[in-house]
Length: 174
Image (tube, rainbow, N blue to C red; front, top):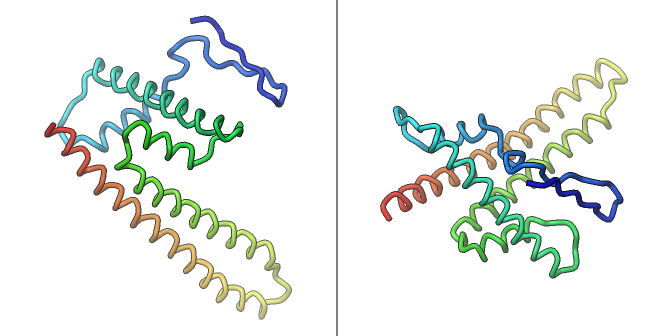
């Protein structure tokens, strides 16, 4: 494969890919995902692992291309989450849209919670020991807020796992 170079509006030159292998996901990531999905004791051949890796690469490229089409139609150069969700619909993966929207919302809440905690830590500087004690009380309240966000994230992950397990079973029975 020839080296493809593109020059975006920012003026930086960027290599897209020199070889197809340059687009591969790390093997450790693929292996971890495969192990999470399969029951214990199931082995995966190198050939199957390689095929799954290639299929993953093709899926990501196709989803990105579809999402980019939506961004281009809106005359934008930045892909948004809504572009990706619309691409999932066009690709007929609409049953995954709701779980993805839920995960996106949970991620936004988590990021907002982290930002609030970070801002509160910046605003609070120790002036005296008495002031430090009141900070400890406030920090306990802060951690409760973060814990609520973490609990929401865990709940959504559990729901996604349930959906993934159902989908895996449906795929196997077809």
